[in-house]
Length: 392
Ligand SMILES: Cc1ncc(COP(=O)(O)O)c(C=O)c1O
Image 1 (cartoon, rainbow, N blue to C red):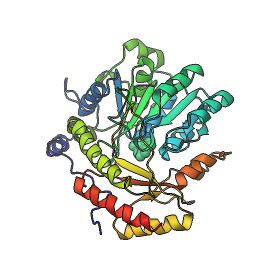
Image 2: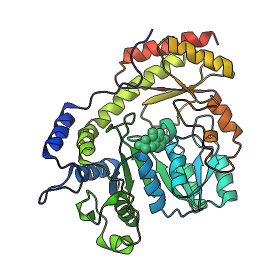
Image 3: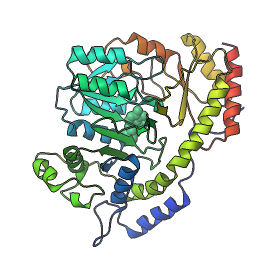
Image 4: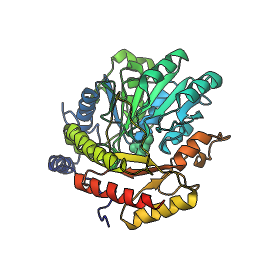
């Protein structure tokens, strides 16, 4: 019986705890509450994350979902515009499309959980959509060479949802640097943890200026960490709404030291991921599609496939749970503990039939890999899963 919780994150680093305490003692939690020429922790985080991401601009906001909403608006989405999106993602993604008045055009996924490129091409052609909101769901980066080509061919603006790929790369280029704008999450289960929080990055002056105003800058945009030229603000500042989605200094103070540890943590995640992968590959029942060579991943979760009917899948989950192993299964018809099935987003009219996505999700199981697990824990979990799978 494995006893460690799958939801237990590492403690916030000591240096971050100290920084947080200093902010609390100062009372200046609001990002624009600065004294004299002081740079706020949020502005410092923006500059640091832009450097890490190798992007010109970064805007810190209150959540990944808010980063996506702002990115969509700043990229030019208007009410009634169609937005291509992979059908396997998390609820904040369709939620953002809904919030900006977009009409989703959901695209099938492929066996390896990435967007199905043939279906994307087909829907790009037939829907006339001018935007693609691409989620690198569970850290599986799409074939970015093919994506960029499709977006160029069909004049589609690419918005990347990198909630699960902070720190990952495709052909040596950071995930998030392929489209017009990228969105990251700092929610507890992501690669840096402030409970809630989001980061938006772009190289585009106008998108950065709009995102700053929308985030809720009260025209105090000169206090940001990365600032586009004044002309970019002059062009949009009276035509852009304030959506009040600022990040506060407390969260930024917690995040900054974690950014310094991110590369070490990525190595720690990947040792654990690779251990689980090697262990699970010993089972003849379990399938894990190979990852593309171009991908440098961050293994903060692992997915595998097991061909089971609904009753067997529920029994498998129960056996795993009895062994202390917490899995998510995307085959259940009613969402429970996840909201990643497109057919549960019934606030949209005319949800399409996507049989491939349904079938793939039906055989997909998902497991978090918290860094509080040791490498030995990962060996133990893989051995238990292989043993349980023998009976199915
Ligand atoms: C794929 C994906 N996109 C976007 C988000 C939005 O992030 P947040 O929870 O910070 O709003 C999440 C959050 O978990 C996610 O899993």
